[in-house]
Length: 406
Image: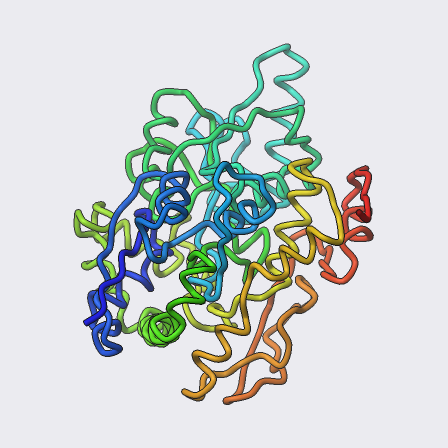
């Protein structure tokens, strides 16, 4: 049995890794996963980079940022497998929720919530009150980019109209309780947990801002992948099988019981289950809130990586260059995914990149290994992302950024 050290943060989108261990999918492939819980994404990144983890549950932008030289360590990371789609929400304090008004009550409509928040921001500015503070889990996180995207599309400048700060996922509720922050964007179950404690209310979700959107990936060192390709291939098979199990609604109760254990997430089963079924706003259920296997949820789309890069450029974390775009494109590794899973008849998209936000309904797409449905995948403001033309996309978003072909 081959032992692999696997880092994770207590979130529902670590489920595939956890269930690969708990349900024996890894063992079937001759692997023993040693799951190691961490509180912060910086720790995950650093422990993976220095070799304490073989692979890790990782924020999708972290390997990209590291390979672009935006992180302190220089280890080259890759992402050959995505750990699902969706799973985040935006929660605000009870005080802010009240100020936003009854029109947003238990509605995940991001346009309506954004308009209500803009009115509050405008009013506070007129009264010379302090800026609202929103927390995300890391500067290089999809949480940060989707929060910024929602704010900007709602007429709120995330650079000037609010303050953004960093808080680890499990500490978001405590930060809200003490008044250190007014809202946050985080993965489940930490939104539902804050709501259950009476600390805040969910105002919109990731799946409402951008349907079928990327979140976490399997991160690992490029050198480890090259030296251990057979181990990696068998791991991806185990994770694929675990993802299929996680994707079945019949397994939700058992998943909730397992994930609620102290060594994993450590909150009540009922709270865990809310995120698994997408019931995090009153009595409403969002069926595509968190997707484990459908819609090619595990395929590492290069267009996802490039959208993330576009947001790094948009928010001045880096400049555009053709060299950097190439680095980003080579960070996500659909070639590894295809080689590992193709022999097992897994449905594989015909391409490795696509226009993001173009599908308004479920659509059958060309694939090998069996039928494959994608979408819907729209952004709430109706703007699509063409990965072949990042400059035009940023211009359409109204961000005046100098783009350099270096």
